[in-house]
Length: 245
Image (cartoon, rainbow, N blue to C red; front, top):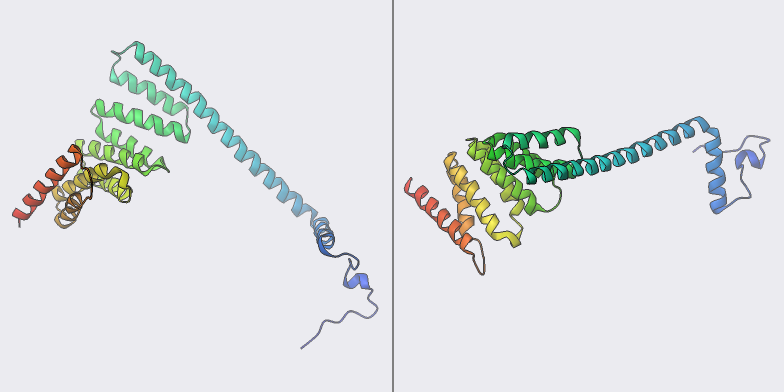
């Protein structure tokens, strides 16, 4: 094997330019030497990093300002509407749509989507209402119960728009989000029932029966009247589906 051998006449500095340094001193000496050798690349890298930091900070400040201005605009509209309770729904929609088109931040978008979704539904525009609730639901990262609620209501609106496949999907999202949340067993049971009912209506009998049975399998120590109602509804559909065999 060929070994490394210093050139004839080479000094100790040629082999090791920092013979007297050890530890941290040696590390920083080598580091700054390399920086000096690659000055242009290092300066370019520092410039890119600086611009990136400035861009991120500026973007966060912009979004914070958008949220502040948008919130003030919403509060102004709410006060105006409180003083004019007979305002037409279409006019209310225009006011909130104007805010939505002028300001944008994650929290503001969720708030406006919920408000506009409710107004669209009251105006009979169920598809647009569902789209707003679905948009908001996707934007919520925490609190699965709240996320599930948005998709559950979106399912109601999709069904009102006679979009049964989409309604089934929204109820299914609610079911998946609540499956491990024992603190909302009643809400979970209703989501199971709605998803099962739509699957049965959409010709997916086996999947529907599986979901409806899960409604009955809920282990609730002190069942509420609400749960008793959904349990009866699920039982009825199971009996009805079995008679159809």
